[in-house]
Length: 416
Ligand code: S3P
Image (cartoon, rainbow, N blue to C red; front, side, top):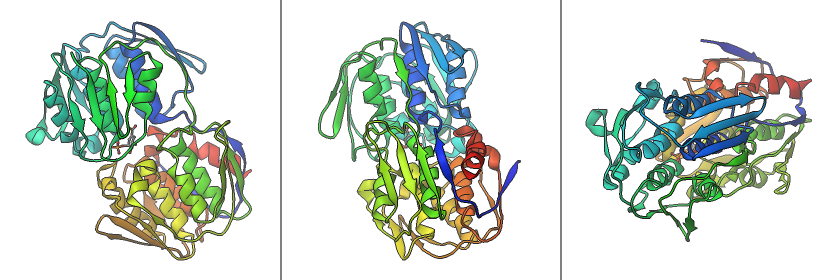
């Protein structure tokens, strides 16, 4: 296990770009693997999660060639991998690949790390079975590893029981190989990457109000430049907002729907923050913050940003309530528990009330905290450490490799 020590003090200044969007990266890689021909992708996420997805499509017979920042993927002739496919820590890969593999007429096994084996998979197994898939997991087919005997799917209309872009994406990926159209009706709108990228790869996609329909079809090869990941930019946005004297510009941050809710929340809290929707540049300067209420309807647009927004809330005047954040219990860790325990150890006043997370502003102190194997908890703690009194040791830092291997380097570059 590796640990880093973060001392408070210096302001953050400068421009930087963050890794390519992780959600988009997984989807582009999968569509390219299904497409007949060669796709060119620039700016893929360089984290271990997406590296695992690339290895998986290679094991399934796609060609992957990396030349500087361009990744060339040659797809179209997927075949059995002959081994279990390991997604590592990535719930997105696990759930989206289940959909893709359910449509391919051979047997696959999908597995992941300890965290993946604890996360709910019934939410994708159920709709895939409705589409005619033969798919099973352990513990009453609720958990990974999953065995998928692909092929023979028909389209369905599926109403998602929870707001989940992963469930929507899984069903739509399966829909590409079905014999009839597939519709997902969302309980609340979620990030639109699957439908946006499918449309960009020539799939017939119809977006209604609250629903999306895909026609079966084979994607065409893509040429795609992946925008910067808003979920990573959020760490610098909060850091710049709370560390006195800071001014940070994060370049080329994805600005599409249901992804940048944290910008509105920080602005409401009094942050000096602007997101240029043309260039994607996100500019943040330090300012005093005050508490706010984050409504449940906002949560799908900032679901991964709650731990770092809790850091902003811990530095704000008054109380911040994140309403209806129960889904955080089934992320890489139970993030209600890990946000509460780790920020709590640093002196933040964080409590869980039903499905709400409540944070009262105050001061933070440096101490020893742990990622619990969760990249976003590790990075949220590092941001909190920037404004704590005394140094903070974040152990389990290696978890950050799943999404942002250069986080520590980028932090240093903003502090010099
Ligand atoms: C993701 C959707 C979200 C998010 C995850 C990435 C995606 O999960 O937490 O990190 O790429 O579709 P849910 O869809 O399960 O909320």
